[in-house]
Length: 322
Image (cartoon, rainbow, N blue to C red; front, side, top):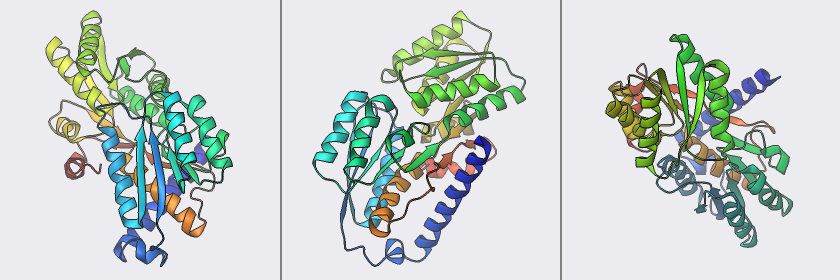
């Protein structure tokens, strides 16, 4: 059943991207509808932590869609689940037209999102909470299947001969990050999790370095975000470890590191698409009653970026769109 779900969601995602391309070639939003004079307010509320460049791509995609569709985008963020729930409630109280929200701390943020749904505000989830979003009455989701993404990384490690793997979790309690490491473990059984504080990158580098010195048998370090990957690369260089670095997500520095071999590959969830599709789907719902995905998640990943395709992708990463 799960494999059927994945096939369906990938097909929906492909159809959505093709529709976007078709609209773009015919003049953007005005080709989709003559109702672009109507302005809407969309609140995007995430669990972004300070200094995490990943969210720059989410915002870039959301702002691109908002600019095309005459949408006022109100972005806010807080890594604390309780504070993020308060931001959702603030959006409800201000009577926005639509809400896009991440569910990293689903037990805390989900009930607030449910109140938005109950208030009649079109609401989509994205980036995190792929298993939890239906529980709160949310009908649309855009993101990667994080367990599948983790399994993909683990399978590539196993195919290359396996080895002892360290999976670095940089945000405590994040369901998405924990799912990634669980996926790695499922396909690369000799995997150990390491908890670090992703908001303090010097500390991250020191913690990873200490672990590599303590356990020289580690052959692979899997990081779950681009800034942490760069810290891990510095840790291996300083300790003399020959462990391969594998990461999730991209930025321009990681793209360069993939090109020069310091990072083996990246599992990309395409955050620019997540931001873009979240805003566009709300606009389509508000203007045309559309409900993308038919209740199933629309997958934006996992997409593997390695030496075979980095040359064509690096330019987009430098532009903050990939």
